[in-house]
Amino acid sequence: MAFRKFAPRKKFCRFCANKDIDLDYKNVELLKDFITDRGKIIARRITGTCAKHQRKLTGEIKKSRQMALLYYTATHSSQVHKRTI
Image (cartoon, rainbow, N blue to C red):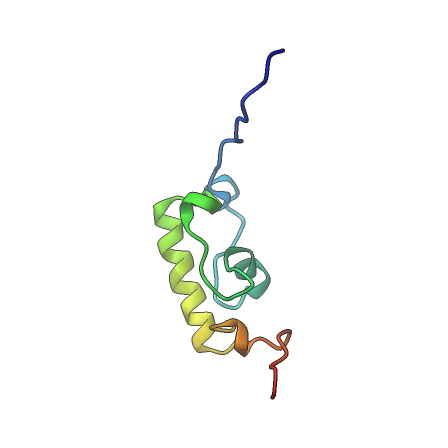
């Protein structure tokens, strides 16, 4: 019985592969792919983005948070209901 070892797929930078994607703080739908539901920025080793685009992405996420287009934490999200006791 031969068991095959799990081989993960090669990660690639989505911004290097497709030059048409505009990395901008106003593009909230794109930026939401790179933050968790708790509001943390996902590391580049997980997303596969290159270092150059990860730095730009982090800056754009922070700008978007400052302009109140994205939330900082999960408690600021409208989807989370606070418990009142």
